[in-house]
Length: 267
Image (cartoon, rainbow, N blue to C red; front, side, top):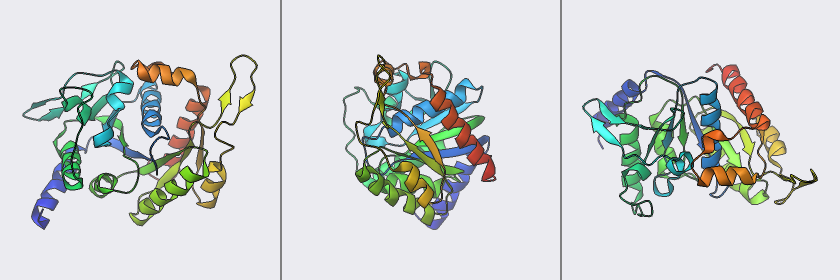
């Protein structure tokens, strides 16, 4: 793509997103830490508070956002652009999953094609007015997250990790990438942090006591909170009913995220 085309595409993206107040990315270092689930939980919490919310499922080859929300309607286009699907509560979502004939159909694309479809999601979708647009990025530091970070003026990135040291080691690579790109780091969330027995109340650290809080302090970014291993989360996710989930801990995470966003001067 030549420089003129790049400039034109950026202008189109800016035009598409001029009515979106806040644009946030959710990122991890490695897969399997529940990043998409955390994205869905944050989107649901923000929507429950009366905000207009959208989600871009930028994990092109491993899209899961529609399944989590129970959305199966196919995307369609009008002269104004592609129209996002909507969840039960009205969260707008865009995902390659909604382009497939079958949900088990694989997307076998190389990096340049993945980057192109992401740019099309950014430049060709008619979002309308939103308070928050969350971008669920794929793991790592490949073409997809790089394309998003270079194409959208993000207000910041939220990092999701699990308690293991291995997960923290890899997420630091993503953090360093974002720092180099000059995008604010809004905080870290530790998912699958512990399990609380519903019968006796005993807390078990199945994956070990996490070091996320300490790592966040060492890197000078906020620790937003912990999300426990909750069987109801798995059930609601599998049944497409994530918006029904309620948690005092989740509300506190959202509160801290919004305060951090405000203090960063972008709230």
